[in-house]
Image (cartoon, rainbow, N blue to C red; front, top):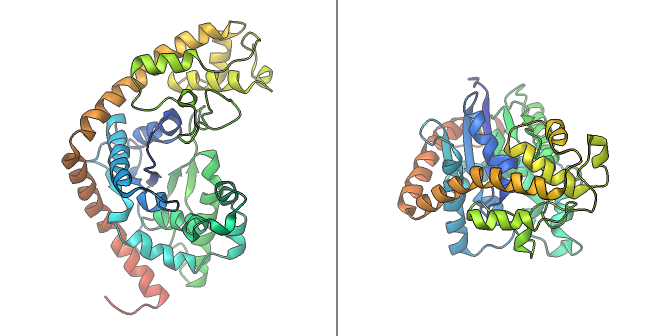
Length: 337
């Protein structure tokens, strides 16, 4: 059985309106990991359809996420950028893992409860077994590391449980490595600009709650200027952030965008008015985000190029996935090539 060197897999859902949370929580980190790992970055369009997607919008959003990867600095020649649906082994392994995972494990997944809401009977089966597909995404390439936000840690722990159970059930010690999480940076959980206690989200009815990756400089400045604050001056210590979610969010954003520890940024703005932080935050956000947005527009205006990159990435992903899937079939006892 061949062993692979450190390999990263991560994905982003093509649900449209990519925002600063997607960038700081995931896409920006993808770029740095290219220096130390073999990387596969996936637009997870199969995950997206756990809730209904307009087919035309789904195709457009898939290209937009791929464009964001590349515009942010992911190199699709030296690493692999692809969309999940073009590699059928994801769905095939997901079915095997559906039969390995236990109902009790899935019943503990808090994200299903949050997304399904009170009327769980009307949620799709896909939304319920979504974590098993995520496990398949990772294990299909024997990925050793997965960059995740805090809200996905539980799903990665499930992937480890599923890998271990498969290895035990089919007498294949260490066949699937147990993937490790990579949680990076001071702003892995970016909150709404209108309510520091809620995550930044594309579904928030207020456009002022989020900075999107395609916002113009004027839009970025306006949204930060209108961001919710509290009446106190900025805190002098990290302990003083307790109970001040908006201050914590804006200081965390500044720390993340300037690659500084949060403690350094707190010291920089200690006792200052929010207006001082907002002015400087707007400057660094425009400097970081506006060029990425411009490059995303250039790429999405040429969909044929994006499609060619995704097709090439899918070919290279299948070349890794199929030998692993063939070994899974053999171990499970499936007949055929």
